[in-house]
Length: 282
Ligand SMILES: Nc1ncnc2c1ncn2[C@@H]1O[C@H](COP(=O)(O)OP(=O)(O)OP(=O)(O)O)[C@@H](O)[C@H]1O
Ligand SMILES: [Mg+2]
Image (cartoon, rainbow, N blue to C red; front, side):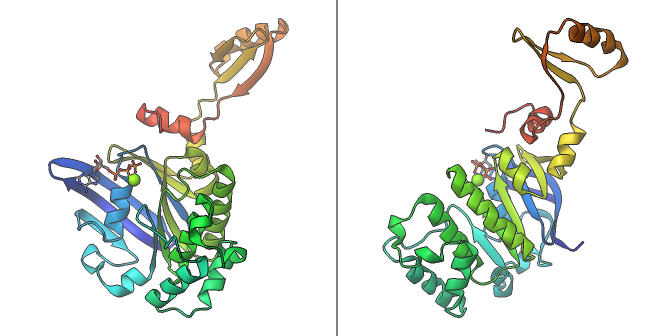
């Protein structure tokens, strides 16, 4: 599988503070790769370095086979689609006029406006003034803007943060469609549910260090203990180890008809994060 992003021994220091510490990861062509971590863990810093917005740090970095020294190359920028806190629209203009402006900027034919609005399922809102759109709709227009020039690789910094569940689902749909068209997507989030349903692979970033990388379900499986989590009819909760010595205790509980629910431990991605870092993600 082609590696679109390669990062080895990546470090980034601000003054005396090391924000990123000896990080290694690779992003494969056509996957949705999620960088997960709590506030201040270094997610935005990583995106800014990989897109050339922050100066070249130490380590070996290659994005679309460009090294940081080549990130100023206009051919590099043309292949990236970026959605960040700084992405903005002209509030007083219509959706169509906004996107036409970006067509000129990116030197792409004007018919891209309808194509990208179809991609984000907002063609009906073409004539609306941006200030009248909901937050979720604006975010989808920003996504439309980010794909205007048909990028190969997208960097999305918390694309669904502070959106309602329906808008989140709609954006996930758009991102899956883009992935299915062969676009590679690198996103950050601190929403573990989002990462579980959306990302092909995730990396856990904590205090500038990558703690784990893998497919969400594989990580959940790896960190499952197999212990029995039992809730009794009188509301008591207990955890009993999945081992031969537990058989008598479980048998006693079953015979006394005290068990209301019993399940083997299969952690959420959030549980795995807590397990590894000792910290809640939010
Ligand atoms: N320009 C800067 N100058 C100095 N320190 C910075 C700068 N940008 C980031 N940092 C520091 O680097 C660390 C990582 O910040 P970063 O913004 O990458 O975190 P994040 O994971 O994106 O957090 P959030 O989820 O809140 O967006 C923090 O300690 C932050 O204070
Ligand atoms: Mg950030």
